[in-house]
Structure formats: structure tokens, C-alpha cells
Image 1 (cartoon, helix red, strand yellow):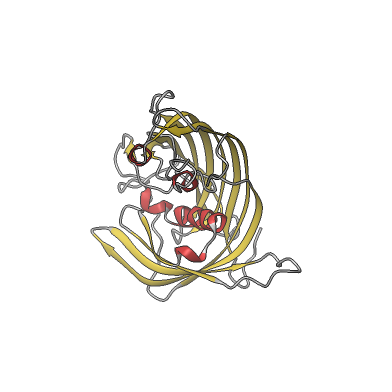
Image 2 (cartoon, one colour; image 1 turned 90 degrees about the horizontal axis):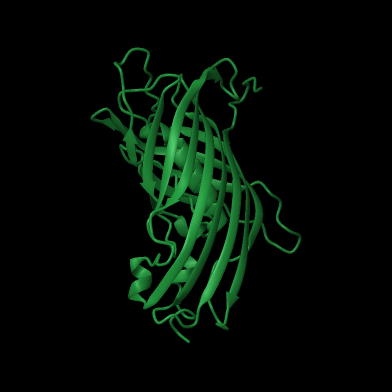
Length: 311
């Protein structure tokens, strides 16, 4: 059987976990004037460097039923990661009141390698952030494995969070809603993240208690807009495959952004997702059934400058 067994389509999705919250999307809110509003865009210049520490715990369980002997599909994952990340700003400019950034991130694993493994080489990822917070990797994506890539994407999305805020500025107590299609390839079409962000309050920054941070809470739900009986994405259909099933997910993110510098100080994210999907040839033969349950806890914190009094 070739339609499913030799196709790499099934390996592209849910790996390691759909990220889904990398900024942008349609923002719906009502704004009443500009008083007391703040714009939280980073104060940076060419040549600046900022250091962060990132940690992740990723767990994905996969149960498979199939009469196909050879196939490429989602894999089991249970992994903890810790790394130091240094961002070097190559170019930072403001156009029409919106910043544009290009930089490179150097990533060094903090975990000691196993006794039978050589120490991992530092990875380098070059990227840009557009005026609306859109993130594009220009070099180095292949230097990261899937879990490392997920962790980097989380850091990048939170670092660029200020870009995605309304241009009019925000103030404590305000809420707004946004939506964005799930961009990770999946065997279920028309998945959309619906989220609500609240500017909760101003509070002491986690690492620099002499400074104040804006605290944001974002709660998101993954909605399925396709009929569970036929969820076939176009790229699956082109390979004479048919899919059916359901997907659900929730995500909660808390971010602290410095009111003084506009830089991300700390962020955490907790995500849960499930998928129950059957992939078959168009005539219904040679089915593969996956049941997937995935969770992740991600966090990133700016490394306190030398001499700072951390809490």
C-alpha cells in the first residue's frame, strides 16, 4: 500500500505540538480615547544584545491502530529542555510608527549531555519581526530539532508580543479578542484559535522589582470549523487521501513586559491538545487511526543584568 505508507504528509502535523499562537490575527475591540494608554514596543538599537533562559516540558502520547505495516506518523514525546538564548540585534528601525527588527539568536543547551553523547553545538537562528509582529526565520531552522524549534517559537512569539498589541495603545483592565487559523499542517482542516487577551494590571517586574511591568493574560481555545465526518485538507486530497475526526485544544499564556524598556521580562504558557483522527485512502481502504494527547509547559525569562536585585 503506497498512499499512506510512503507519504510524509502524516509526519508533518502535530509535531511536536501545534503552536497556534504566534501573533497576528484579527483583533476586535472598542477603544475610548488615548488617555493613559501605553505602547509596549521594545526600546532597542543596532548592536544591542539581550539574554534569556528558556525551559520546556513537552509530553505527547500517541495511540495508533492500523493495518499498514510501514508508515510515517506522529511520534511519542516526553522531554524536558533548558537553554540559554542570546539575541543580537542586527537592525532595528521604525517605519510608520511600527518597528522592524532583524537579529540572530544563539542557543546553548543548559542540560548536561548523557554520558554516551557529545555536547551539543550551539544553534544559531536568524529571523525578522515585521511591523505587525509577524516572525520569519531566514536561516538556521534546520539547526533545531522539533522540540527545540517549538521552544524557540514560543520565545520569539512572546518577545514580539508588543508588536501585536493595538496601535492605539492599551491600559489596565482592557480586553480584546482575536482569531487566527492554525498554521501547523494537520490532517484536520479549518482549525482556528479563538483567544481573549486581558491587560490584567501593572506589577513589579519578576527580575527587576524596581521596575514596573504590564501583565497580560491570554486564554485561547482551538475550534474546529470542519465537519468531523470529512476533515480532509487540500494537500491530503491531492494525495488521494481522506481524513475524519476531531481536534480540541486550550492554551493559557501570561506575559510580563517592562513599562520602561518594552522588553519581555518573563512569559509562561500551558497548552493542552487532543486529536482523534482517521486517515484513509479516498476509497476508504487502508485506514490509520491516531489518538493523540499532548501537553506542554513553556517558560522564558530575561537573564537579570549583572548587579541587579532579582526577586
